[in-house]
Image (cartoon, rainbow, N blue to C red):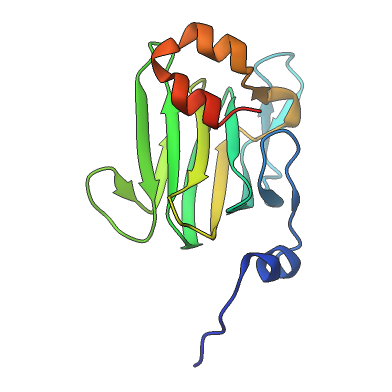
Length: 167
């Protein structure tokens, strides 16, 4: 079976991806569980889990943000991605998401609830197709966009990466 060459534009069209507001990149929700649980904030019902396709291109990045739920990133193809996380105590970790496995390199990574996260293509990359699974489910009302000035005050030791991956 012959594998066709694919590019970012083709993936956006074939997977019906849309620009992701604030954060950056392109996405489409592919799964939202029918099963629900009480929301942490107001007791309303919330899906147990969601999953999306997520595409980064050389013109995009995932800006610093955080969620009140754990998020699992899955690498599907394309070029390597650097996933940066910053915990409340200021610990910065970078995992390279790609098809390889080794120290700091894996096809999957977990971002803990409440940690700041941002992602970018590794140097020279053209695009990467990823997936993100959030449990309890993602909801735009839970999304906290990283404010550049606030992040710089809280984590001055990470000035370069904050300046690079905030808007």
